[in-house]
Length: 373
Image (cartoon, rainbow, N blue to C red; front, side, top):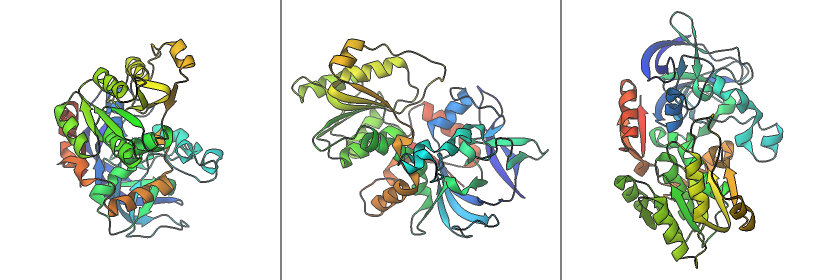
């Protein structure tokens, strides 16, 4: 057992506070990681606000992390002390129906991710308060901590030449945004793509659309700073409102509309999906990547338009990524300068500044911020 510090939420709605923690030694199939950096993702904020309900409090936030293996559980091949790893907020067993079908993001092990326990045992915790009370780990990871113990199915080993304070973004933001375009919308060269919301995930949808050969990559965000960054990262046009983007898309497609609109706003509503559906043309696809309040029901769309124009509304979890292979593929793209990570990071905070980091996120000041340990 080791002593560490981490940012936890004790109730929802609530705020992250840093506390002392005790972390169990890794058991078979587990590793302990000394974190180098972790991204401040909106999903962790959804846990604090209650938009994503979790059954166990307190919960240590964080799921977008990278660090160095500090200990390996007994009879756990494939990892050694000193290995560099990127966490994957969705595990991959490699054996279930979904993994075997190339849909690793839907692995059966993910069923317990938000319970915050071991993936195969919803009663077993590895993180505790100093009084012994269990602490859940966001997605079984809890990377808002200096150290964490995780299942090896939730870790991907990467080259030691890669800066861990950059490739931590491959844990979530990059794969979610990039994959929403490449995997879920199946964007092809010459397409017109709209990205609604250009925060950490949306900015990678912009990169994905550009890399896929889209002729028009249209960024939509009310924050001027984010529109400016989007234009530097691959967007060809940027607008403050979806209606402007839709008008532009129709102007360059003979009145049809975009081939795909990716919804990556901070907190989604049914109205966002309806706006996105109105922005696409015949046989177009709306990819719903953003999260909102779980109980919300209803999308005010025209059923006739959905049918007669053969439009599609497609949900996307982690952008349909296959973490075991896609994280390594994206790491190579970064090495070769074909994927921008440095430019995504607009601020760095210490662990004690996690609350300030989320204040800045709400204020629209950051594309992606990280905690550096």
